[in-house]
Length: 443
Ligand SMILES: NC(=O)c1ccc[n+]([C@@H]2O[C@H](COP(=O)([O-])OP(=O)(O)OC[C@H]3O[C@@H](n4cnc5c(N)ncnc54)[C@H](O)[C@@H]3O)[C@@H](O)[C@H]2O)c1
Image (cartoon, rainbow, N blue to C red):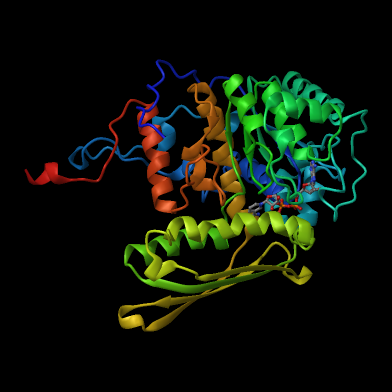
């Protein structure tokens, strides 16, 4: 790849005026925890813990300047009060019923926002049991072809925009993980993709209908599951042509987030790795969907890619060649959304002496995912207003399996991702890049 300078800073960033509609395919554990949380925060009942857009600061200029505003004070982001919500789901439950069934939030947290949640009814979904076998819903669209179904989604988007008087929209996929599919000729160009939609080709997954519809309606798309969806030349072509930001794949929440914290630490100290065994028990609906081997395969691919890219065995064969990496997810209903993950990490130190690290993470999946949905919605909208189009690599921070330009290694290290995110914000806002060189303080 030739070294070209970064695109110039936009001359103007359109203001975040008016309402921002956040549309989620999927109104399950993650989506309802996100929506209930935003409503609770804007009523002053909770704090947006875990959200960079709400809580993180960004250092600007020299360290001696002591300038560290909140990100949201530097960057023109939509305010929480300006958000309106909509969703699609094959299960017809309103957001309150869905949140109760998901069992993430306690009744004491749901009660104050119950009426608000009850008002959010899912629109009929584009759904196909061949892509998600464990869900059986009745709230499903019928259509002559996948193209026709996608056109119905476009109409939903237009109706939602009119109904809520939203100025701008974003779509964040919060629906189940679909079965694993590889990119094929149907995904190679937009023309081939649209022909395949018209012919209801098997290679067109429901998630692709949502993404196509969103992009056709001028709406950015963020992909919270490991589904292929917008990680295809066809839909990237569409995003570029329509000047829309897209990002993915798969929210980086529990075990993989930990991996992207620990693995860079091992590599930074040149400690070797023999093996990393990860296992989980999970009892929510996501766990049930992932109990299907075809859906798990999509998740597994997403989870496995992380360590290789961080540890670079091709550069450090003595330390990282042929380490064994195993990931298991077991559906165990009593655990609900409160996943428990165990990691056994076999590492190697000075003179080849083995050591072990054990991690037992009692995490709450949707509690970790909800602030990611919020940040992706606000940053995707900001990116669009700043004229950013195509793959948003700076949002890799939020994803297990980050999208990157063809031929480019994705960046998995959480701290490099964080630097990339903040430097992108500095770049867009006309602030100096921070290199951490620091020699200027000792001149
Ligand atoms: N919670 C996390 O930490 C986390 C992390 C990474 C990724 N994810 C992904 O986020 C997604 C949501 O997770 P969740 O825990 O909310 O799952 P969930 O099962 O509670 O909710 C998913 C919802 O999507 C609906 N759905 C399925 N196919 C659909 C379609 N074609 N259109 C519209 N709706 C559809 C289901 O009916 C269900 O209500 C999953 O794909 C999961 O793998 C979650």
